Structure formats: C-alpha cells, structure tokens
Length: 96
Image (cartoon, rainbow, N blue to C red; front, side, top):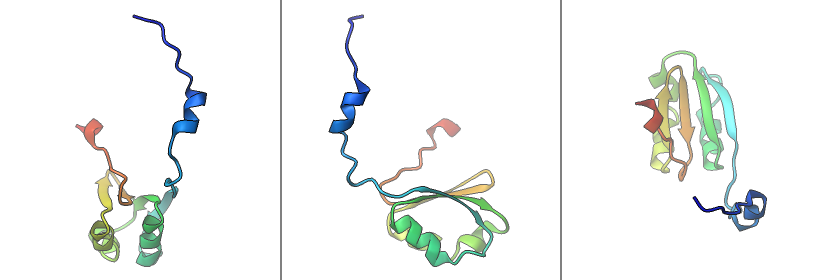
C-alpha cells in the first residue's frame, strides 16, 4: 500500500458548513411542551431526541404530520422518538 499524507486539519477549510444549523435537542415527550415548539425547533434545523412518556400516537399527533409535510423524518426507536429536519436522514442500516 502506498504512503499518503492525509491532513484533516487542513481539510476543514474545504468543508462547506455555512448551511449547517441547529442542535440535537434532548427532551421528554409527555404533552407538556406545545407541539409548535417542536415544529419550530425542527424548522430551525434541530434534531429532536425525545423520551416518550405516554401514548406516542397521542403525544406526537400535534406535530408529526407537519414534520413529515415539511420533509422531515420521525422514527420510534426503543422508548424514544427521533425527529430529523429536512435534509437529515435517519440511518437505520445498523439496526438490522
């Protein structure tokens, strides 16, 4: 195998990160947070990782359709709901 020089510190200047916004928000889905807050967070580019406390269908009814309509993704994983904004794919390949 040929030697090669890989300088990851120098590669940073070539990364296009201007359009990356948002956070990973950890929260509890128990009905105490208004659905509009979850929608606004996802619209701003954040990923939600919400611990489900109660009936998922009832608790997510106020925002799930809006998230999907805007191109986002929702996935129930164990006792959590993962919600991703448009352009962020929830990769489930390692679950099988």
